[in-house]
Image (cartoon, rainbow, N blue to C red):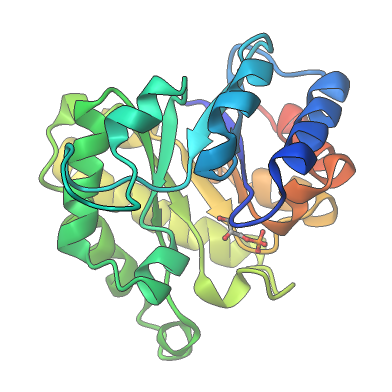
Length: 258
Ligand code: 13P
């Protein structure tokens, strides 16, 4: 049975003190998370160790980073390696977020290398894909996302795939308040699962967790998480407020086990 996961991607928000306060309020009110569900908190690098000391004691709550470098170590001033991320206690790393692809020009080849680095250092990868508005308007989003997945992940073998979580984030829905409809999300998630099945087989595709991201809130989370191929959410803005993030976590606890 595949895991249902809610990830809070804090992006470049909150000072260390603000982050600790937020994590404490989330953790003190968290209920209903069972063995088949997980919460991941992905704060900025600078907060990982401190937030990790809080998440360590919480059942089914994990720590994630938002990025890592594609090299193992060396003269890369300002960069953070996968081994460094792992050494903070983090278990996950987000790779290929559209903000990294767009603002920092991270291309498919770089993201494939980052993914390998992360897996080599025993991190689980939350691999993001998703189309810009003009692609959705041209109705070529399925091909676009398929290409991202093939370029980013198809170099991996089946054993490595077990440490991948996919996140579909249509760029036009990120931070815009315009969520994909549950039909749009379900259609793309089913397509992504078929793309995985064509390379790794039906069982692997059935086992992989596929998250939806893009203006997910407590008010739309139930409907999105009710889709058979939507296994949780990658949450930006709503993960910065304890009450909203807890509301989305509550929705994943209500979602039926498949
Ligand atoms: P919002 O939830 O703010 O739309 O952001 C989604 C996202 O990019 C999460 O990684």
